[in-house]
Image (cartoon, rainbow, N blue to C red; front, side, top):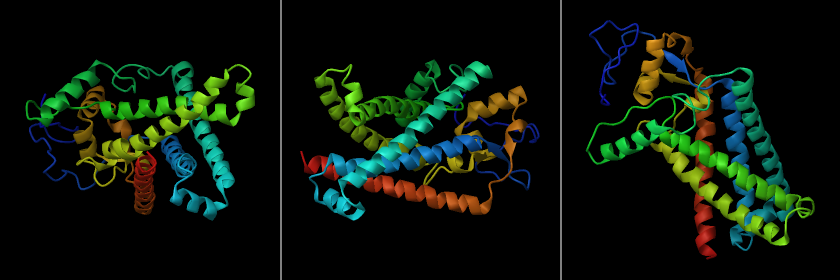
Length: 299
């Protein structure tokens, strides 16, 4: 199946497929729910606390930098920066634990099928390998653009990069915070190692989130300048069919498509979300530039 294979929605007469260049057949545009309210709130907590960790961690990592010392004087010294850094760490940890609890409940209590494998899972599978190869071939004009299910391979890559970072950065950070406790069963060299690991992994996380993740999510041509679905939780029929063609077709074939229909996002909330989203992206890009300046300036 190629990228321009027509998809016929249930309400569209057979033989009259919609394409992205044609107007909708009905006057009222359909919206489909992609993320729940809880998932959206969790994302807000996640990116807010991460921005706080990045903004407070960089001055401590590059404490000899002029801008870091200036920032420390404004907020009350490096002690105040460390306090806010720990506060954001606790918030992010709680968000991560809530996510793990949600996965466990869906898998063990609700017996949700496909959470660890299948088209709706965040676990990479053979289809993702095929999509990577297919995308590379499409980039150089050697094949059609691949079609994606609920999560594309780059979304899974983003997810597991953050998951891995939470474990490594989180453990090393708490090992430094509660060093006397961890010193009971860790050798001295290990406590020195976690200091290096925490700093370098944190820098890697900043570089990844504020470059790769931003590009994958918001700066791609079909999402630029911002993908609003994580804020509104909903996407239009056209967006759904274009970005997640295989999921759309699967739900239509299973008769589950209409169950995903939701109300149009409230106008004021969309504008408010845009302000929050653009502000977060701007802060992230500024922190990315400061990271590069601090790193190469102290090399």
